[in-house]
Image 1: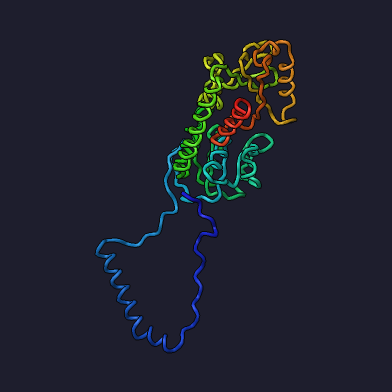
Image 2: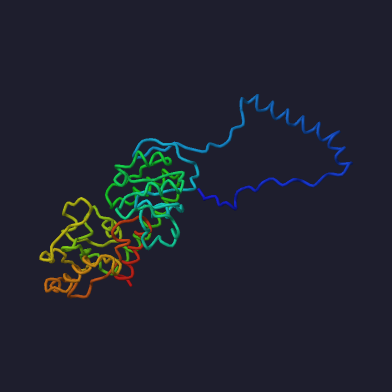
Length: 339
């Protein structure tokens, strides 16, 4: 479904110039009778077929995490009380009016000027939400457990589905169903899968599929292996033909990350290590812990460190996301491993 721009909509009718006396006489004596006969015939056809003219519906029913809700067919002012749905909307060609938190770098340009609803305490600013007068609110249940009833009074409220971070395709498809954009979602997924398959072929041809890959990121008191099975990057690395370490593939987790202390640095052992960084100055404590690990004697014993296969990437698109972030991970793989 192609979004309808305001400039594409019909303009108001314009009055015709006055007719001369001869034309008015012709319309009165002949044209009016013909028009009346045509009108009566059309009415007769409608009655014979049992049809009555009806306007197109302005709403449609959608089922979602909170139940079933009537939403606008073409919502114009969407508020998103979620994180992953922000990117998914952009990928589907929809720009929301308001978002819960500051957009990450890879969608910031498309969302320049949108209202941010998050308070300093990390909650939804209900007053601001009401002020923007949304005609549809998309929300993740975990974000609005205590304010759901209040939010539902502002505009039609629809719950978006998220399972594990690794199911980005499922989250995209669910949102596309709600927004009536299934075709766009399938096109985005198919394009990603074709590109990942191409990269996997090149990874194999280069012999890199025989090397193990570990993904790490710093936390305040240590670090995390960030590509366990339930993580966002795990299935992307798999589809790109890379081999995650046994620790990452065989350790059960809740959110796809394995927390380790600096003394457990050996758990990051791999032929290739991808280090996920935050923006400079964003979290000094985490950056300091990561720096401490990467300058320690234990770090120097890791195969990737000894052989110069340690690569830096951005947390903006490696921690969670949708098809845009998934393709940026493929960009990083191409640049660092196939460059």
